[in-house]
Length: 282
Length: 269
View 1 (cartoon, each protein chain N blue to C red):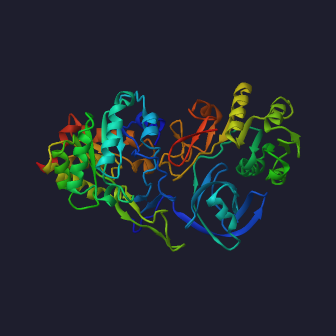
View 2 (view 1 turned 45 degrees about the vertical axis):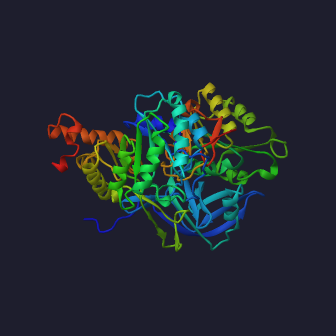
View 3 (view 1 turned 90 degrees about the horizontal axis):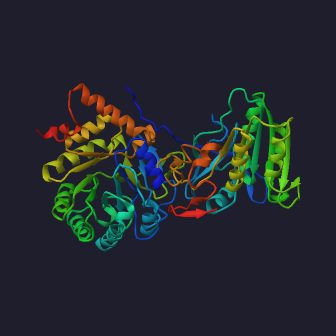
């Protein structure tokens, strides 16, 4: 995703935007097909295609919109994460970014995320700690619904200095086989599941983490409508992540979701959206 | 109650009916199927083990594509013989739009860009419009679709860089002549080809106040508006395009200047 692409999403109503995850070296990502639609969702195996941290910082520099810009980084180990964080910290003025996100949870890229054990509690803590030393930016730790231990991982991240948890990434890995060809469709064979099909799992993860940590939670996974966003907030999310909805509803998804949330809240005479955060726990 | 769930954009599979050579570099593949689609739209063509590539639709019935041999994926597509299976999703993207009241249109194709314009010319002629064509290529040997275009246009003009066929020069020579010819001046111009050519056409049409639509090309990975690899100034070429109004393209940062590679790095034209 380019800076112009993120600006377009912000103009279309996104309350904040997160970059594609930046790695030390440029990455072409996985072979195509990288996305395939499934029943009530999609599978993706993008494989962290990105121009690398140097070109990435140049790309996203000069963010001048009011919506917060979150820089996402992805490394092979805590050393790489720390080095990436240091680079972002050095350029934070020119980037004009609001926070740094650590993607620990991709389920389909060898050497990264779940496939490197980064979403495990201890490793999540270690990476957060290493990054915390390098930057004064708020640090968001993006966890996985695909492996057990997300609650422990959230606790470790909080203890290691995380400012927020992004609970949610694609779920899996999963696979879709084209029955006319008798072959897996994705170039990488398998990929992460997203979209409405995974929402119940994301909601449950947010619900459990809300009981375990004090830092705010971004609920990500399957949010397609305003009603979905309300549900995620009732589970405990202070913010809601949206991705695959753009496929089903176009870039207008953000405005549509906001409108649906507003009318739902108004009908029930809620003054502000934050009043519903965590109500499912009361 | 819906008993089954199916994707919005399914993958379809058909057999190749015919594969013909257009030039040393270009092969045309006809599938044993038809597709409801508009000229200017494209399909993501998939062969297991080879990957997925965006290719513009050169005809709807039978579904036809022309493939330039420009890399690993397309050279594998060139090897496919009649009877082989080809899978695709689509039609994808936004195609050319013909406005009510237009009586004469001009299609301008450079290099491989002429294929979707053949489909447009065919449909426009069938709808009763007068269609003029300009086809440009480096040399006579590289020229494709010129013979097909003659059949679906009132007149077709040809240019080559080296003068080995038609007028010597690029398509702009013919384009400038036609827009200034009162008997041939078009109500709209449709173009597809190298981006510097389309930039020149967009500027000319702006100056002459002629509506103009361009079919653009960018490195495209998903074709569904999700991965961001085909970004052009905040627009996705795969979903917002590939056909854009020329006025809009002139306002998009990067048009005529740079594209991006698989990692998202800028590659200047």
